[in-house]
Amino acid sequence: MIKRNNKKLRQFLFITILIAFIFFLGMMAGRTRTYRLSIPGDSGVENFDIDADFSLFWDTWEIVRDKYKDVDSVNDQNMVYGATDGLIDALGDPYSEFFRPVDGKRFLDDISGSFEGIGAEIGIKDGVLTIIAPLEGTPAKKAGLESGDSVMQIDGEMTMDLSIEGAVQMIRGKRGTKVVLTVIKSDGQKEDISITRGVIKVPAITLEVLPETDIAYIRVFSFTQDLSQDFNDIAQKTLRSSAKKIILDMRDNPGGYLEVAVDIAGWFLEDGDVAVIERRGKNDNQEYKTSGPSIFKDWPIVVLINKGSASASEILAGALRDNLGSVVVGETSFGKGSVQEMVSIGDGAYVKLTVADWLTPEGVSISEAGIEPDIIVEMGDGELEDGEDLFLQAAIRTFR
Image (cartoon, rainbow, N blue to C red; front, side, top):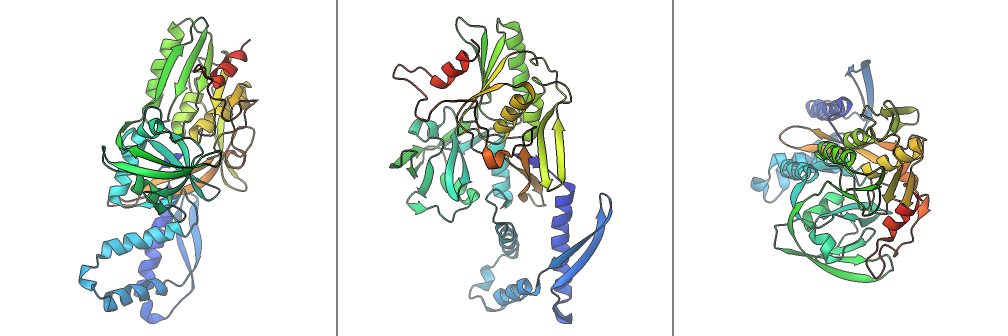
């Protein structure tokens, strides 16, 4: 889940740069390990104690400039990028990343809905690179990649020490080229999956009124920037149809924008209902409340999820269940309940930083537990031999 431009984070980055500059000026005056800065904040002057020896950085910089064999090829800006990358990497959080300008642009293109690659969302689960969800209709889905697959190798290279961004760089490529992922399936079998990259158009949402029923079957594939408008269109079509009930299918939906999830929750919840709680510290909770049209607040709603449902889809599922008592059907979701802020730090570079955890309106941590379904559909039972969708059939039966 991503949010944009947080003032305090900008201040943090400003402090880091300022401290480095101060220590650079003070290198000849001695080595201080603790330093205090006071800067204007949202609520007056804020003090920061920094317990670090910045001279190590500058000593290393000078050694490189003085002794490296190919010093003429050294690019100072690239060294700054590398140091910044190391700063974020030291947090030990797989979802916090530094993006150089070209990588930042690519990342923003990804979440806007169109890019070249295989079409799969990846994450780190229990320390292992994992497929969160292959997107519908993409090369990843067609090649047989599944939610929960553990990615052990990419083109023969081990993924053990790869960051998410590092893995994305290896998997991403021009359409028509191939990448081979060595995965461990849910049954423990090892499999090499060859995938031909393509142009990925991330689908947003579809609507079908199920035959011989009064059920609107709404499938949400990803919470992209355009989904709010797309959902408005779908809602109007639903209201003009014969439907009186809704199945909201968010299986294999890897998430997206928080604001979009809250906006869509507003179609179902009362104005002012809590959609999700943001927990930044032990006693620092912020509630995100709906302000939507509440058109479907009295409609029976069933939510479909699986282990590929993550982030924004988990937020919406939790909001509907906690506020409306909507029945959740399927598998326990992925459990990606942290929020990242995407902050521009100049020159096209970005920092994506985990700043909070998400709780459902009733206070359940999404990261710790995921969203557990009320009606469980066993793994491997997704389809019958005749192609019948057991998840969907289970959802339909809840209305009877």
